[in-house]
Length: 197
Image (cartoon, rainbow, N blue to C red; front, side, top):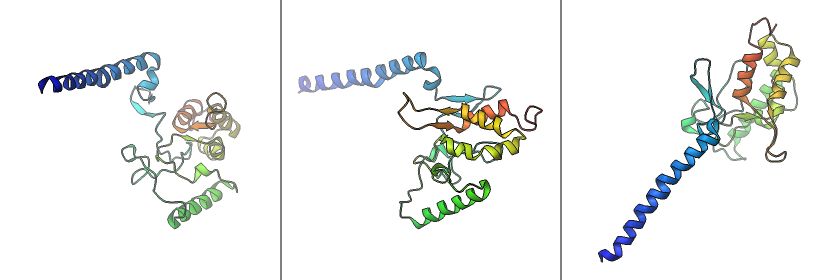
């Protein structure tokens, strides 16, 4: 009986060591050499080296001088990375329709625009989408320029420079990373600076 069990135990230990330890360590090491920023989570750091977020995880921005992300249903206040999820409302949900209609009316009132991009009023599946559409980003240009005391065209040019095109020209949609663009706004057009006025 031992002669029958022994090969099973040896192969289990061997494949666990090979595929559960050696292979993941090798791939992680290769990734850290070839793609160090991505392998570390695409973390963005502040002036003193502290982590301020990841380019892959959305976070809430509410101040007028910043691009606002799409709405989030992750956690009680939204953008809770430990509670990533959508709202679980179905397309026929009266609560969802009421919220979207209310958000659309508020957006139309604040921007004066009749057409509102879908991502301005709908949540993503994870609730942590870091990107918005160029249409939604451009809808926010005047508010940002006014709050920063900056020329509208300067803000529009900076946002346009941060539009990421589809991979290989056809995979995905054009998008704007909210956190990275907000950092660029702070660097190029700081609120209340001589450059912004």
